[in-house]
Structure formats: C-alpha cells, structure tokens
Length: 206
Image (cartoon, rainbow, N blue to C red; front, side, top):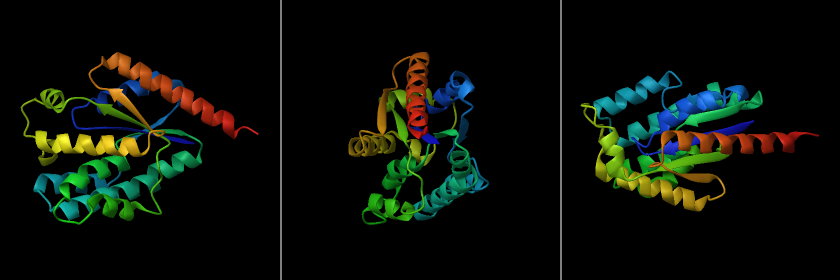
C-alpha cells in the first residue's frame, strides 16, 4: 500500500508523465487516479472555476473532491495493498489555493492544512516537476483561454509554494527537471517508483 503523487504547475508535463507511467508500470497494476475529476464532485470544481466562484468556495470544493477521492478511490485501493499514483493531490491545494486565498484568509496555508488535518492520507512519495514558468505557458498555447490560475504571475507564486513544501519535507519530495526529455523523465520516475514500492513490500514481509 503505497501512495505516489505527481505534482507541478500547469504545463509542467504531469499528464504526459502519468500516461507514460501507465505503460511503464503496467506489470505492477497500479491504480491511476487524479484530482480533481475522479469523483462526481470534480464536475462541481470545474464549474466553480469556469463560473469564477469566490476563492473560499473554490478551495472548499477542491477539499470536498479530495475527501470523496480518498473515500471512494484512495483508501479502498491502499487497503487492498495496491500501488496508487495520483495526478495532483493535497499539495496542489496547498500550492495553488494558498495563492488564491491571500488577502482573504489570514495565514492561508495554515488554514488549508487545518481543513485537511485528521482525515487526509499523506503521500508516501511525491514527484514535483519543476520548470520555468515561461516554458510551461508556451506548452499551454493552444488557442484556449487560460484559467485564472494559469497566469504567469500566479504560476510563479505557485511554483515557489511547491518548492517551499518540498524544502519542508525533503524525504518525501523528489524534484524532477521538467526541461528534460519526456522519455528520460518517465524512465527516471518509473524506476524510482519501482524501487520505492519494492522496498515497501519487502518491509511488510514477515
């Protein structure tokens, strides 16, 4: 029972990495999931973003989706001894919503952590893809209108928040250079997950 999370700013290559992990770790039969979107509440989150909901409402909808995700996907899979890989998880909330809530709630990170306290399941290992914001934005230039959290200024602060979280827990976070080739990143992350998962299984043996 191992929970791996993939984090990074929008345009960092998370989705491409997770797609590669499905193939590279096929023999391990991992449960691949994501936030938001793996529960019925994901649609409410997307609607809140599209409708420009106030930051507190948006943050709490993300938290509600996280709770449903844990109850319906994460916890059952971990209880069954599965390897779980989630594209975004609680650290996304801490990095993104901390920016959205600045000036609205005093100490937004502490508030967000308090909301999660006592029921969330901490990841065992988190891969954080790091790359220049300009590069991330260029990857997202596909003619669509960017969401409010995809602006350069916001993404810069979000990435700073991610790096601060990683500095707090260096044993959990693995920083990944997002400028490397997709294949190189995927091979490195898949190999690291295999090593970590194998070590975890060996420790559980009697």
